[in-house]
Length: 231
Ligand SMILES: [Zn+2]
Image (cartoon, rainbow, N blue to C red; front, side, top):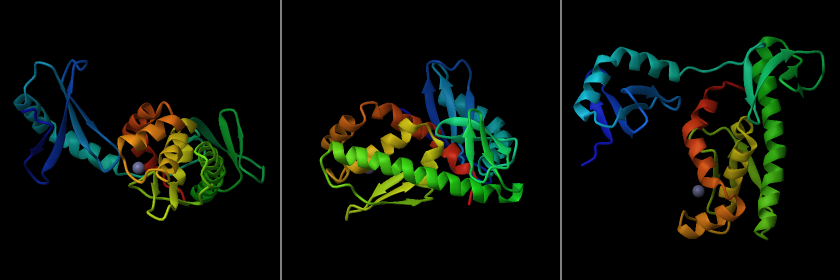
């Protein structure tokens, strides 16, 4: 049987998922930002016992990485911030409204207000992009344009209730536009198929042919965006 997970005993016990890798040359540990999920990459030819010993030897490193993964990123002037897939440099400016020019996002506020000002900007921008995307996909499926709400959920990027109400996380605006587009395509498709059947995925594919790629990207990278502390 293929082992996909093991637990390091101790205080606290640490559960580690195993990823078999043909590309990895050595055993390697990784901790994701979302809730500090620990993974060990195991090259071919290396046994699970060796992976377990390696993880045990690096227990302290894992503990530190897990702790760091739960830290929040508070935006500051001079630091970078992802918006629509671009890493923008946050810059203090005199303009009344946040303005993006090339590599910079110019904002007029004191640094302590940055999480709130940036948060409001993200939500505004998210609303307009989500609105356009929802309209586009509903039109494509020839269904009435659904209403949606913007939330800050940590577990789901989008959802569709049994009554057909859509919800999206405004954090999608930080990601590349194709990702926002995929999440909207996914939820709008639920208005036609309220499940995850093959029929449902067929509809998603019509709206978003590259959806597999985007889904994988979201799984691998989505948690990074939860770390940003905005208001
Ligand atoms: Zn779904």
